Image 1 (cartoon, rainbow over the protein chains, first blue to last red):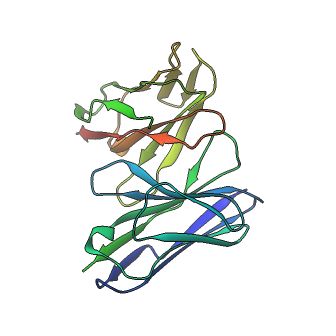
Image 2: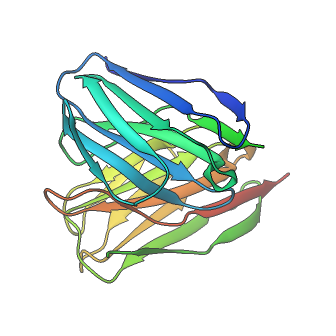
Length: 111
Length: 110
């Protein structure tokens, strides 16, 4: 069966520091991969999606970037974090069909 | 872009009561999904709907794909404390990304 792993679960970073969140999927190949951000008490905002290695689309211009160096690995990065980057970050995968499955999320606090 | 509205935004119910919530869109979708998110966790897929008018159950949960393809409904029967969480709907049109609603926050009082 397919599983998605996302880490770390929580992260506290100072303003101006870099960020790297990692997401991997097991048990499938060529998944569509997604990064979402969820502000406190709010819905899900799509940040990036990828349909293949090195194929990244950005939905919202911002301080973040994403990379997909391997088929089942999706990385969310920032060179310099801002206070406004705080939030709950969720990775998700889809087999290309009409369903999406989420990781456990990373709670990022920028201080 | 496409937007989904969920109603109600939040609700407080007594344990044992039935719950109804809905999701509406200004545009049509081919698929409707319902997720539940526990605090500090990622959303978990509850029910997926693929055809207008479709009615699907998952235990005490029942969801329907509206006949206009612009709405969907989720019902929970005989609520229990572990039903607490945020319920998200999501719609998808073929070949496009999922669009998520803002969520309905459910609280169950003992």
